[in-house]
Image (cartoon, rainbow, N blue to C red):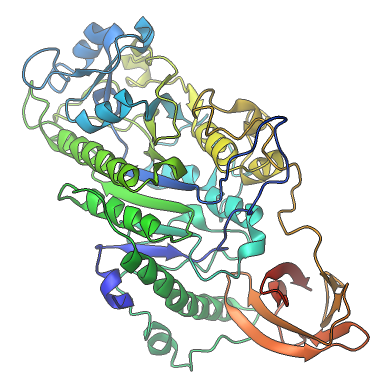
Length: 543
C-alpha cells in the first residue's frame, strides 16, 4: 500500500513530528525479590470527546435520582422502560451508585471484565467554559489560574521530549493523531513545537516542492526571522512526512484486525490504531476524536426520551471502545495499552429550554484497558450544589485532569518524579502531581510505581563509548572515543528528527573535530554508529 492510499484510510490523520522514541530495553532499578515488567511496548490511547460531554446523562447519580430528575424533567435518563439506565455495579457504596446511559452497553461489558475505571468530577481549579480556551488548558497542562506550565507547548510534547530524547533519530512518529483537521497543541514540544505534521490531504511525495519550489533537501541554516521559522517548519514537515509515512504504511500492511468493528468514524479511527499496533509500529501515544458533544439543543429527540444525538454519540463511543479492546485481546496486545476519554468540560446540571444542556464545569473520565483496575474513583457529584444562584453549576472538582494523566505516565509508562514535574506541576496547590496520583488505577501486576521507576532524569544510555565536547559549542565540536579507533561514522539530526548530515570522518589521536559553523543555533542530535551494529545518541546545543 502506498502512502497516499494510507492517508485515505480516514477523513483526517496526522502524524506528530516530535521526538520519536522507544522505552529503554531494560529498567535499571528493581523491586527487591521482584522482576520489573517489560514496559517497552506500552502505549497510551486518548479519545477526545470534543464539545463538552454531558456527564450527568452519561453516568447518572442514582443516590440523587429525584434531584437529578427535577433538574432534567425532559432529558433525564429514565428509571424504567426500554431505554432505562444500566445499573453499573450494585456492590458499590450508595454514594457511588451509578446508572449508565443505556447506550453504554459496551462499556458495561468492559467494566464487568474489570477493564474500566470511572473517574468522577474531573476538571481543573478555575474552569474556563470557552471551548477553545478550555481545550488549550487541557492540552498545555494548565489550570485556569495561570499558564506557568507553558502556553505554547503541550504536556504530551514536553513529556515525550524529556523522557525519550535519546531516540529522536528513529524513523517512526512519536505520536499519531486521527480525526482532527489540525494537529493538537498537546503534542508540541519545547524544541520542535513548530514542526507538527498533519498528513491530511497532503501528498508526502510532492508537498514540500510544491509549496517551496526547492529541491527537497533540508537547509543547514535558517534565517533568524519569521521567514526562517516558516521555512524550517515546511522543510521539516515534508521530510518527516516522507519518513513517517513509510513507517506507518509498513506497519499498516503488516498489521491485522482481529474483530469486526461498528460502521462509524470513531471505530474506523480505533481500527486503524489497532492495526498499527498489531503491525509493530513503535508510536507510543495515539489520539483519536469524536465530535458533536456541544449539545445545546436536541440532545434528545423529544421530551421524556433518551434517544437523540447524545445517545448516538455515546453509542459510538461505547461500541468502538469495546471493539478496540476485543481486537487487542484477540491478538494478545491488550497488556500493553491503556486508554482514556476526556472532554474539555461538562454541562450544567439543569437542562435548558431546547432539550439540551449548556456549558458546565466537571465531567467524568473513562480509563480503560486490561491493565486498568476496574471500579469507580470518587463519589457521585453533589447535585445540591447546582442552584439558580450559581447558574446550576456543579463546582466541586474531585480530580484534577492532570492527576489521571500523571498516574498513567508514571505508574504505567515509567516516568520518574522529575519528568512528571517538568511535564506539569500543580502551581495552584504548589504541589507535585506525583503526590496526587489516583489510587488503584492499575492492577498491581501492571503498576510499576513500586521500585521500578528510574531515579535519574537523564534517560540517555549509560556507559557511553563516545564523548562529545564542548557541549554547548559555538562552531566546532569534538568526538572522542574511549577505544582506539581509526574513524567514526555518524549522523546529525535537528531537534525534530530531520537528518542533516551523514558521513564518516577519520580520527586523529582518537578525536574528530566537526565544523558546524554553518548550522543555526539550537539543539541537535548525533547518532554515532558503533562497530557492533548498535548506536548511541548524544544531544548537543549550538550557541
